[in-house]
Image (tube, rainbow, N blue to C red; front, top):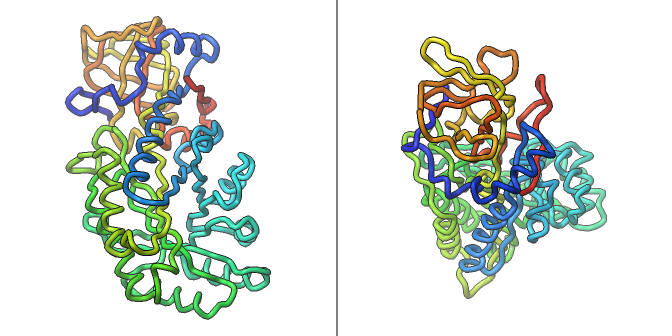
Length: 404
């Protein structure tokens, strides 16, 4: 069940302003109907520029790679691509989408635990940055590179035990010899050259100090295992994990997301311990998805039926829990508006909001909610990360997205 109280929800100032954009939104809804994802382009652009400004202030060279899996509709809209962002992909399907969107091969970061030989051959030919995930993949890559005419530069995804996060299942462990043995394999091959380390923190890592710890783990390993590591490493790729302005995830005991500059300062201050300003420095890559997209996208559904049962307002809308599957991860931020997008605020009563599927458990919200009526709009805020990517065509088609 979902709860939705003002004490839990972040300020609505982080999200699209319904009242300010009323006319534009009504025009779009008149053309598209509901359910529909609406993306406030300026919100996403502001998040990107805030991150870019912070990186520019704290590190000489940097790259922002947009995590395609977070929201394919945003990737296809080209919002971050037009701002100079790279593509971060985790499968052959996503790699080919990046190519369809006309990303240059050397502006694609290829991550993920499964890459077919065909995928790897394409990425090698394109000179994409391949971050190898495990020994099986490294062995296949060594074989494929043996027939390549020029030296292939690669990165290694690495992992280590981090406070409260534990040890990721992905990448070569820095602690049990996996990463060291990978370096030995690479060192024996004339066709492979290591140029990057990659570590990805868990989603919504709100403690900036964990980013410092992650960089320390990488830096200490590089110092110990790589001769002349400052000149060897062209890239340090710290992945994503930067939080957005969502309600506290259900699994967290505490929740304190910081401005993006707090995380970038933690990363770059730690990097300078190993790569001081007066020496060679790698390009810093970050791969945000949730931070960039979550706040700026809403889902709009419409109330189709209201009844009273057992002293409770029972609302049916034309959305579905399958359209916002991350409801299981954290409570949603839901508000109701009239058919002219005037916010309803009075007369809260015990309520339950159901979706339009035939599932008994299609419950979008349960708790106190304003009295509503058929034709009202229900707006789900902060739904831009993962919801549309994970939304199946179950009974109804997954909603499209329009820019506002």
